View (cartoon, rainbow over the protein chains, first blue to last red):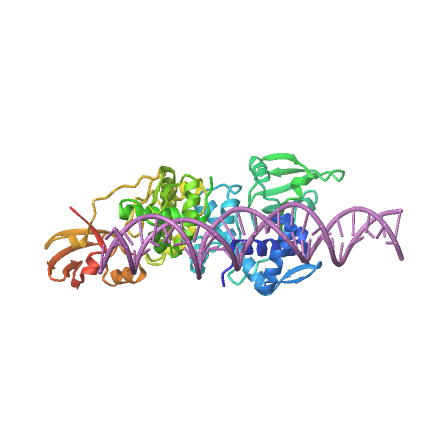
Length: 219
Length: 219
DNA sequence: TCCTAATTTTAGGCAAAGCTAAAAAAATAA
DNA sequence: TTATTTTTTTAGCTTTGCCTAAAATTAGGA
């Protein structure tokens, strides 16, 4: 079976929302995420339900079926593999690859994905630290937490970002923070959630917003 | 301006036909090449004319404008660069890459193409020996000729194929002929156009059909 | 509870890109 | 030249994926 770009995009969006919401995904949530109108979502969701890719109860939201999850995971797998390619092989910057990967993720060829994965050395994570689903659609769970959850004097390795807008990634670059960077919390202000952290030789202040969008792995 | 997959495919097909026919391209010719109905071609051709990508006179066929040619060449450039990538980097066989490149050729990103070209070492030819248009859409003309035009005792280097069906390419593989292979014409039968050729240590018979689909460069 | 507000669905339309069937034009043959 | 065949176009319909506006349902507040 082959699915259209649009169908794949819906499945991907619903997959992400389902994880984030830990349950049924509402029509409006999908419309927001995909930048379309709720009525369009209802249409598509009914078609996807007909194809057994998700379960849909009027007014109650949707849940992906195993089949739907598998397709979504495969699209995400392709997206993230291509991102690795763009950054590792073509030397793109991590904040430039999303749009291109949005297109490449729809290329259909099992063989291509297999060979690309191999060519890239079977990476486990994309350039933003997000895990790459395996060919069966399984995702390795990592014990990462938000930097904002860290306490004073705790130390962690940056393993991912929550937000991945260009502005945010560029901010991180300016501060020399990327995947693998060691971060130490020197101080934390409970009043506004801001922190003083150490990155390499530099010590600086970051706001709560930043800390809430950076994932670290603490040992 | 961005063009749809369909528009790009029409432009590409017309570009090839225009070169082959050395003049106006008829509705039926396009329909044949694209495996659609003439009525669909008429529709699309009118749209492309409205966008100044080709000139169209009812019942008289079409010709690409400079703008149309440039877009077609850029799609062909992408197609051929991706083919190089698939063969050189992912170790695909030259008869397996066409379909995948048909998809990849529509990915939109100037920067991606630039970097891919660079990553591949700015190749001039794709794995089938076809020239890769430069970023401005110019194509290097090579002084290649068909093997069938060679005379007895002439020697050439295989630089391309005319047909590129899987069957034909697989036949060439079996005979150890690929781009760069040296071929010597040992004998030629004028009656049926068949030949006896030498490839490496092997000498064998080939039919006219084969000789008419192999391009060689003679020194 | 009942009423209002928010969410979701339905109904009806639109553009892209294809199709079939019929009409029109061009090309070919007698 | 006229008749027939081929090519091309037109007209009208389908599907996909989106939209707006209106109706239906659910949720929240007094």
